[in-house]
Length: 296
Image 1 (cartoon, helix red, strand yellow):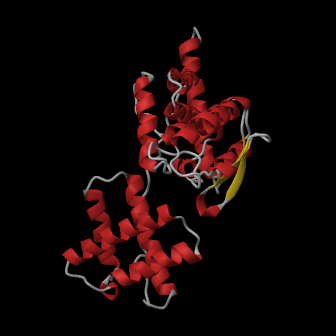
Image 2: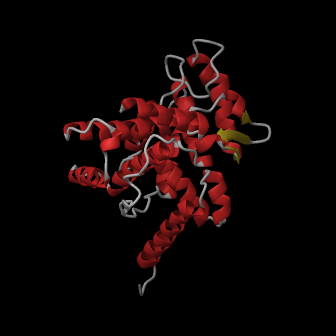
């Protein structure tokens, strides 16, 4: 059974051009399905029918996964069986009549502009190489709304500080060129001149943001950095790279940016993914109205 999973993963990486991160998520989801089926004494994909898929969905829900997680795992299973049928390995798709689970719609919770200002000011309390890196990195994330994976994969050559732009490669290897404001360019110059050079162990390293070993910063490392500064800034809830992305999008819309422009900046393939931020913006305006208007 694992052999067909491996073939599917090769297909999504090579032919579909999906990222390693997406392929890893597919691997985890399909391995979980295979182990579940093995526990039911099913050891061949030919023996999987609609009943087994529905039983697996109930198993996932019973483990108290978030509705979005269940939906993602079921989508991975559907993609896998669609591939098997298309490749001629199976005649029938057991997921064809299985509906995708509904997903509870959770609105993002961005930082307020004041909270964002406190967060961005926190690494400026020091001027050592790590602090210079963190100042530039946090400011860049708020300036562009880039995903965590996009930030850690940036190379130095992606920057054009004279033109005040950064070249970013997002999902599906789609490239976009993002504008930068003057403040973030200044911080990036300071980091490149006085921070990164002192963190490097090899002059051949291409990654823009490196750790204290001189190696590319990891996704986990980035999350820990953002989390620590959020706590140091006295922000009462957990701050993550995605919260910075939410904040960028919401503040842009609050400032008058158009939905299409924000979609392009975020790298969303569908505008429906961006529209959720209009709901956040509307909600925030309502909260301000209710607090401020004397008759509200």
